[in-house]
Length: 194
Image 1 (tube, helix red, strand yellow):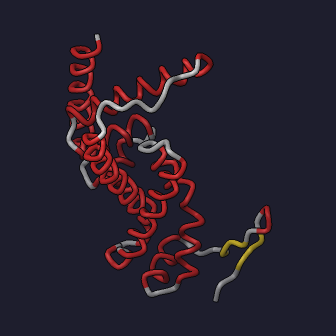
Image 2: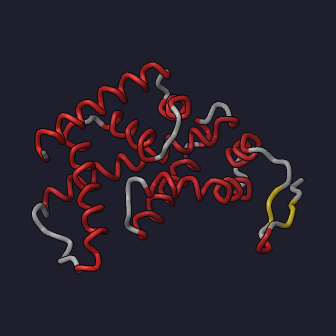
C-alpha cells in the first residue's frame, strides 16, 4: 500500500520507500513506482545531460530518452540499491550515443557558423569557443569511454569511486585512464591551440 506525505508545493511523495523497492515494483509493471523514480532522479539526470548538451530542447529530449531506456531495461537491474548509479550510467551512455550522432551530422554541415556574436556576448562567445575546443579535442583524441570518464570526473565533479561504480571500471583503472586522457588532451591542445 502506498503512503504519501505532502511536500512543499503540494507534491505528494511516497513515504519510506527506497529506490530498490520502487525499481522492483516498476519492473513488475507498477507505473506509479516508476513515476516516483523519475520524479526523484530527474534533476540529477538533467544535470548529467547538461554536461553534454546545452540546448534546452535537446536536454529534455535526452532526459526523456534516458528514462525510456531505464524503463525498458528495469528487468536487467540486478540490485535495485544501485539504481542511481545504474541510471547515471544509462544517462552517460545515452549522451555519448547522442554525441556520436551529432558528430556524424556535423560532418555534413561542417563550416557553418551559428551566427554573429553581439559585442555584449563576447565573454559568452569566448566561453563557448573554449568549450567547443575542449569538446573537439576530446572527440579527436579520446575514445568514448575515456570521454565519459573526463566528463564525469572533470565536469560533473564525481569522485573516482562514483565513476568506478557508474562505469564498471576499477578505481585504479579509472585513475590510470583519466591520467592518460588528460595527458592526451593537454598534448593535443598545446600542439593545436598554443
